[in-house]
Image 1 (cartoon, helix red, strand yellow):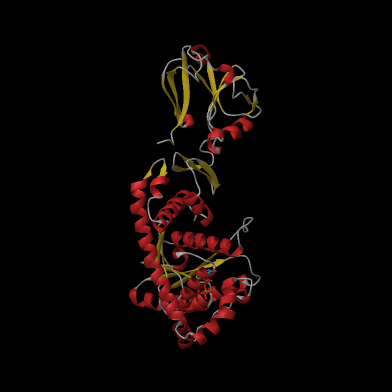
Image 2 (image 1 turned 90 degrees about the vertical axis):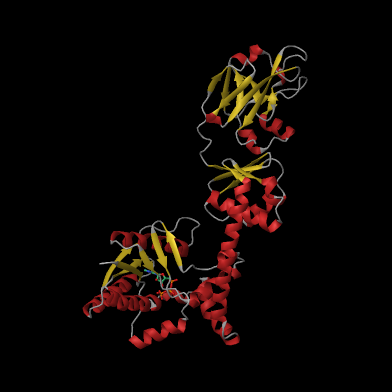
Length: 426
Ligand SMILES: Nc1ncnc2c1ncn2[C@@H]1O[C@H](COP(=O)(O)OP(=O)(O)OP(=O)(O)O)[C@@H](O)[C@H]1O
């Protein structure tokens, strides 16, 4: 028999939705799963499980095709995570697991029009953009599961009337009165006054969320089109992006960052990339860092550069020597100045910076710490992590600095110039 799941907290809204779904299912020949999540947060949660179970058993005894199951969340919020966010995330995972186990691929959630209006307002009050103001979608697909909110267009009063009409009992979550939660403050302090002054507030704000949803769809389409022209597998062309109008550039950049970081980028980062970044730069961000090289912006995941082996190299002949594990290549060219002799380049070791290395920038200078030399030459932060070449214990070449003055060949004598070309370069 086909099956549909309802996320059933035992509260007012999901009690009404579960009852209405079960009645329709009876007519249509469907089975209904009532899925409850015990968050392990309230001392009363065991009582809510008991209430939900006995309510479902009572309905089943009346012939409604309802079957109850529940799951208790384990663990606790990670440092820095809000209790609300942890509970929401755990709840969706538990609901999904229970639905899958019992063969359902559709879960109904009981949010209604006032919930939608509240979400819109809360997002606006946090300064959220279109994505926040679009509030909750009526239908969503995630990891093979469909999540539907069939009552998103229904006024709260209609849900209330349904409960009254059928004499349904529900539990009240005491945390709904806790003023530490923004939604509760909105419900308890703002909403009554708002509705008194603006009788249509619920309908109008839910409508505004609908407009935001449309605007969001447009933004996504526009970003997709723009990124098609600006993106390749190494990153995006930031110079090209800046030729777009400011709103369009910021829209495309935010969409690209969202894809890379798997979370919205802070507005300050977007602004810096669009207005302040020069040709080169590096910014730490969620899960890795962003690197700008010759106006191309790429995202390097943490660990992506960790495995860089030490290699023995002979670079004594002109040519290009790709180093895939290092994501770059050596370029060796004949030159008149600023090169090294073939002998020096014959037996080199390519390796990471280890700390403590001394580099000499000028023939008449003294060897100094790499940090000082990098600062002197304003080498961008990410290039400072590039490879170096050593001969025995002596530095010969450092990416971003060039050949150590102690190994420079005399001007005019046969010599070869070295360059390190990262793959991220266009
Ligand atoms: N503990 C839970 N177990 C199962 N589903 C839940 C649980 N908590 C919330 N839900 C589902 O998520 C929806 C939104 O939850 P939220 O707590 O925001 O809503 P609510 O307005 O308090 O709803 P309700 O009156 O049904 O508790 C609920 O209507 C319900 O479908």
